[in-house]
Length: 81
Image (cartoon, rainbow, N blue to C red; front, top):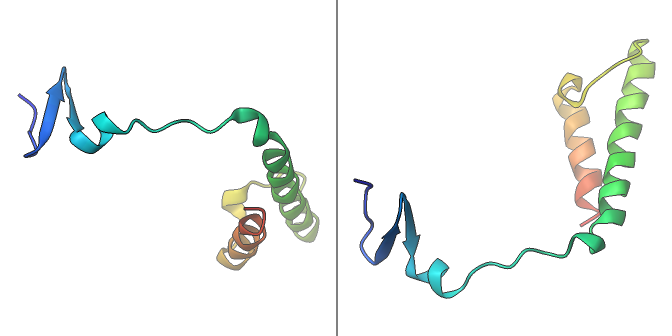
């Protein structure tokens, strides 16, 4: 038996609160996000390529960036949205 929260409804194995049952969330339209996603990919790739050149390696991943470089990347991505 699943844990039940007061004021919630158990449907199958999932617990549904009254707020979610009354107001289902709508998904954003995919067509509007394509330019932003493409720009985000371009920014990420630019940061990765720059650091790969600095380290003289052919392949580098985002997780290989130092914390400061990750912060710069996130800061630039945040300006998109």
